[in-house]
Image (cartoon, rainbow, N blue to C red; front, side, top):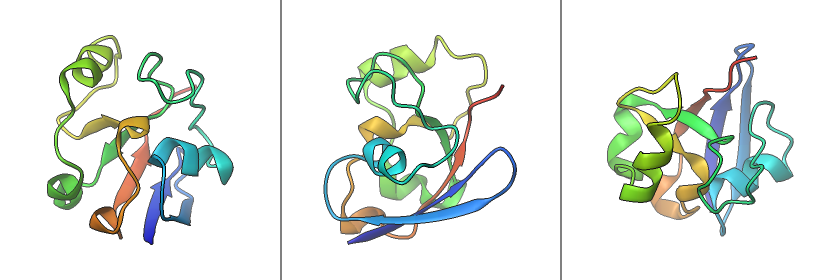
Length: 104
């Protein structure tokens, strides 16, 4: 089981729990504002862009090649950017904090 905290653009902290699947689906299933997951988790839309807390980067690792290519198309990217559809839910990521990157 993993607990993941999302920080929305309004600064609201939303903590969700899961034990399988990917972080994007967990966010969508729990109504986390700003995580749309339009492509269904196949890394082709970037509507699940998040910023990983710096001290949690070692837990989630760096983006893979396809994910990095998709992130290059985004304007608001940092060294801590990830597409949460590419982060698998597992005990290894328990306690991570993700800031929703979506801007209106």
